[in-house]
Image (cartoon, rainbow, N blue to C red):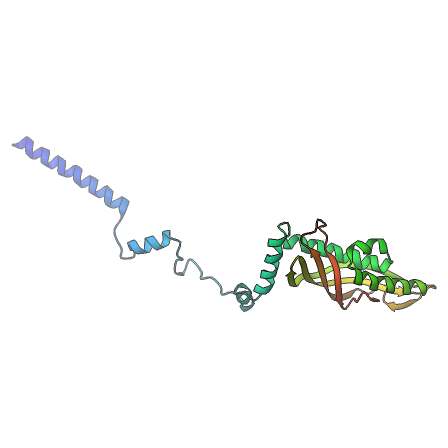
Length: 228
């Protein structure tokens, strides 16, 4: 009888030790534990409510909200249509090419370099540029020109009419330009001042053509390549 009582007491002590360890590991409920539903929502990706340790997200500026809600949807739709018609078209790649084309064209025009201009311009634009260059040559005038760089370059409009893709780009550029006569006297511009100009150019390309190059088909803006 005494041995049975001793065994019971020993088992009770072992059970007490096990319960104490479980209590230490799991802890006590404090009333702030997540409900099963809360734990499911967290696993499903729902955001936690803000607290003292996690700051709430800052509201987005209104301009960003308007852009995100589709203010540019017509332009995006037009660029997407061009992309679907020409799988190799990429907006960033196009803008890089437009920047290079702008610098080459304004520099080539200042130098009167028809060979550089011809493959980059549509027929009407080239004819207008050629006329201005010829007039300058007849007066024995030259342009001292230095391209400085861009402040901003962005696409402002686009369209696809059958196979003809047209993209309008706004260039906010800087350069130094001065027209001098045969004696070297400045007749227009300033050889030391940096000009800030904004030009809006239209580039066109047949998306079915094997030639990947875009051509300048219209110009407008402050630089005005009809005479700088």
